[in-house]
Structure formats: C-alpha cells, structure tokens
Image (cartoon, rainbow, N blue to C red; front, side):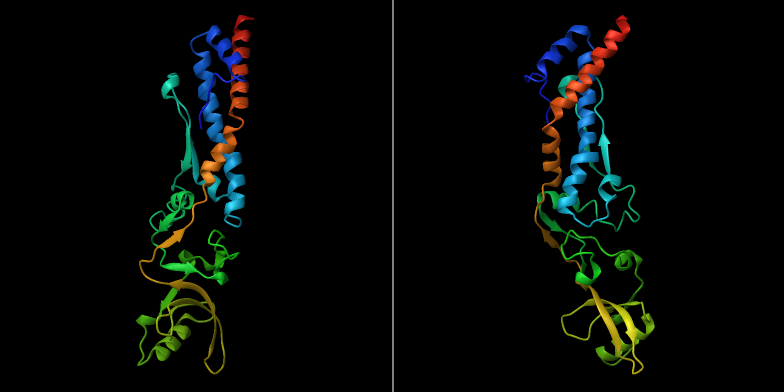
Amino acid sequence: MQLNINTDAAVIFTDKLEAIGKSALPNAIRETLSKAALDVKRNTMPKKVDKEFESRRKNFFRANSIVDFAQGKDISSMRSTVGFFENKLSAKTTNYAVKDLEQQEYGGNIAGKAFIPLDNARVGKSYNKSIRANARISKLKITRLRNQKGATKEQKFKVAVLKAGVGGHVLGSTKKGENILWRVQSILKNGQPKLLALYDYQKARKVKVNKTNFMKESAEETQKHIDDIYVIEAKKQIDKYLGILM
C-alpha cells in the first residue's frame, strides 16, 4: 500500500498541515500508515481469510499477526507493516502453520508434510479446512507397526491395534505401499478391529499449494479507503492545533 498525500481528496488537508507546523504533516502520515496496517490485521485480512480458509480456527490469523507501526518524522522513509509471527504457537519447532502461510500466499511447496490429513481428520474436505480437535497429530499417542513383534505384517498390525486399544492410534498397514495412521474405533470379540483412516503418511514429503494472494488482496482492499484514513488523521492534527490556539 502507498499513501499519496497529493491526491484531490488529500491535497487540501496536506496544504493545511504544512501551514500549521513542522510536525503536523508527519504526525498525520505516521498515524495513517499505522491505522492502515491495523485495518488489514483487524478487518480486511480476517474477511479474506474467511473466504480462503473457511473452517480454520477463527482466531489463528488475528492471534498470530502483528503490526509494526510507523515511526519517526521522516516522511520519505516512514512505513508500517503487518505480518505473521510464531510466538503464540504451542510448539514452535514443530508447528508449521505460520511458516506455511508464505506458500499459501504465493504458491509453492510446503515441506515437513509427512502426515497428510484425510477427509476423516478434517472439518471439511479442502486443504485449507481445519483439523478436527481430536485428530491433531500433536495430541495423538501413536503406536507404530514397525516397532511390534510378529512374523508377518498382519501379526504386527494385530499386536499394534491391541496395544493402542480402543480410541488409540496405529501407524502402518498390511498392504504394500500403504502407510496410514488409523484410529481404533472398536475391537470385536474375535479380535478384528474397526478402524478409521485419519492420515496418509510418507516421510519427508512436500505438498504443492496454489497461491491465494490473501494478504495482497487484503492490503488492496484497505488501500481503497486509505485517503479516508488520512483525512481523519489530518483533521485530528488540525483540531489539536486549533485547541492549542484557543
């Protein structure tokens, strides 16, 4: 976003601010840039997120975004920014939610996606839909098939299921080339389990995602009324000056 103080809507106030003192214009511009970044965080970005990330945790983007407010009085270098940070994530070393947003914005490959959620693990069926609270990897205790004893995969799988128990989770499969994280729904009297497939697993996998431009479009939406923000801030400076005179 850019603020042009010489547009038809702004130039009248720019002239007035320059006439009343050295600090009035920089103050109005600084506040305008800061308020514009704040508008992206609080208004235009959340609205865009609702369209692009329909069922993701509603407070995720607001809680993990931050505004770096404009500083100083040098108009030529004055700027404010809004972006995302990881300090509120529960497990910063393993939670890639913020890191992945760059790929969500521009498109690209997201690494560290060994576990790909299947429909049963998601609130909806889109990649951008959220994971069910009871299916988040960080919350699951996983029993791995490869760590069990048995002469065959079938025997190892049965041991893993019994060890995990009803409500537990087993990683593995008896089928060649398949590696699934299962939830044990129930175990029949004959030992046969009823399973729910939650994730497909492949070590060191990358996932390609299409760009959303959600931040770019959010900034463009705020840009449409940045002149209005400037006029409000300019009027504040003028009112402050008139108050001093009175």
